[in-house]
Image (cartoon, rainbow, N blue to C red; front, side):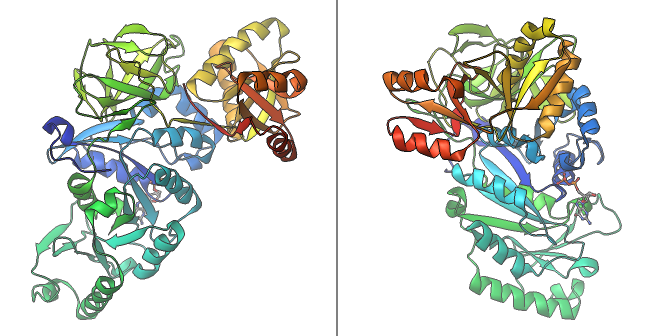
Length: 530
Ligand code: GDP
């Protein structure tokens, strides 16, 4: 990662990022404040998508029906201080983590939100690991400082040890819980005071010359001031100072302390993204890297959302632009099918509303309505046959067989299943022997959601049943070896919706044995979409 002052200004001012957190840490609240300061909404309370972990299945189905909302919350663009922020939403529910992983392929940086009382929680750690795989720069926001929270050093130590990343404090909290009054801004030598009376009021900032500034004592009670001075002295001795390059390389995270609900610390965080956050980065493709400033337009689909309007079967493909300046009506080549697409009605996501995009630049996310041509991993270019790499598909952790309760509808079921497979909502495997399908998902809730959607959108009542298999692995290798292997293992083999070969089993032992007996075959738990 690098900051590139030489980029064209329109590209250089873009910041495309996601927020990662454990449910309940305050992602929704923080998002809302971002939108508020970005002028995208007028008052807090307008972002309806709540932390998904608290949703019950019926909540989820209702949300599915109100898809317009969840779609516009999938990517949000707003301007802040001369910069264009593209915030890509990561679904919080662990059942939908595959979606989340893919979302992280579309961003250049991430904000990690942690709860000051809880520290690094399980979901945060998982998402952090995905960011690390991509060396994404991470900014940390320690939220809920208005509540009783852990000792500041303890929080920082936990992040350093748990996530193996250096932490550089950008601000230092003063007091805690009821006594929390604000932060000392270590990057700017400023005192930021929280307004407890009005949650939507932005903090008062007082410029100082340093911790010895006599002005401090006018605002900070003596005891807290003494503690602040001690702690900051210790922090400066023990903790690394903020280093922009180390941050961009993913080795160091700056941390801000604040309270999203009290609008405290949010602007400082936004300024951090603006100043230090990377502009759109080059993207890897099979043959070469695509630089954002290349004049011709290219991009890749990282998410597909189908049936936003059940009557029309339309879908929106979310495309991250990798290069160029896109204008509405630009003709793009759909690399997989080699067909031309006139992108006449692309959508930009401006907070709560979908808006037609007249133009977009490298780094932006646009939505392209389509009838199913666009799939996850697809490339759109001005002609070059690019294949973007690094968009993963994971082996499902739960497998069930599915059948239509009305056998007359079995044919239509295949079509419905293929659609969900293309959307990335499930893996669908067609066994080589016998009829029927095996569906694989990452979380159990997805079976229920799928059953409801197949019935709602296709009118096909279905039943999911225990499958004899529990694991799936993609099989690759030299063609003759794969064929030889297939001919004697038919009972364990299936094809996914792309026609790729998959080995199904219920024993890890089987997988180990095949890897031992067939060293020229690869059994893989992930495959690149395309
Ligand atoms: P998400 O699940 O990460 O999206 O979390 P939410 O933004 O929905 O917040 C979870 C809960 O924490 C909600 O009840 C919020 O009102 C509350 N919350 C968010 N930020 C703060 C904060 O700064 N202080 C306190 N005390 N509560 C907060």
